[in-house]
Length: 274
Image (cartoon, rainbow, N blue to C red; front, top):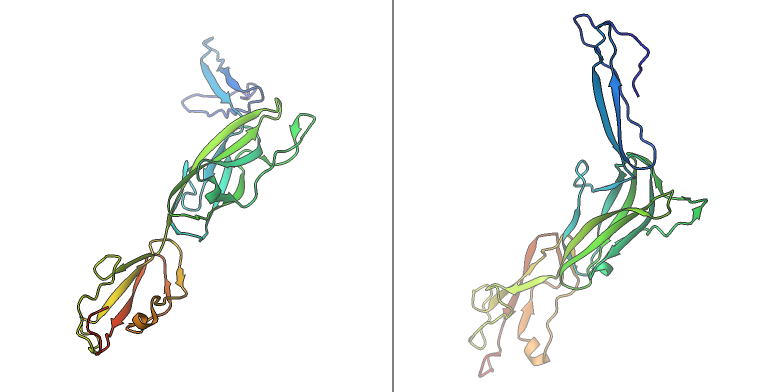
């Protein structure tokens, strides 16, 4: 709306005229014109155009507070460990947004969860009673990733709104959820799965000689601290007695590695190596 009643003296100067657009339902494109009258009988016109749309949701994260996201990627997370992030759902439309439901769907939907699901809401006189998000306002949700098996995990978060007039879903925003479930990587000092001491002279008792000792490497590729509460030797008692572990516990920060030394000390009476 422009003020058409106040005269302006535009002799050798500019004059700005504030124009605002406040659309009402129904949705659609609106057009109008600003007609400027002057003493020369010439009436310049300025075409005005705008579109009325329903409430619309965009999603932001702590890592992306100014740019809306379409993907939330948790990165690598250790199995049976939980990683959380917060979602800010912003109404970027021109009407209040009535949030009726949040859904996580897809093959790995059970690996992701929300802090509180928004239930289907009751309508009173055709209008929803809860979860109204005003224009430019936010609502917060906590999203978690808790992998239970190794591998890449994907799902979709659906943000579903409601048209307060028709009572029908009015807008759906899809956000892709991703995460990689990792396990503790354990290798020997040759990056294999077998700690092979080879042939060692029976009765050898040398320490740190590079022959009798080997190292197990523990690598934490996840974003979580991994406590290794127990490292033990298993097998026949007479064989277990020939090996010594120099660590029985570990605590691995995210992305860090550590090693555990293993020493092999065959008995002098043994005819062949274990």
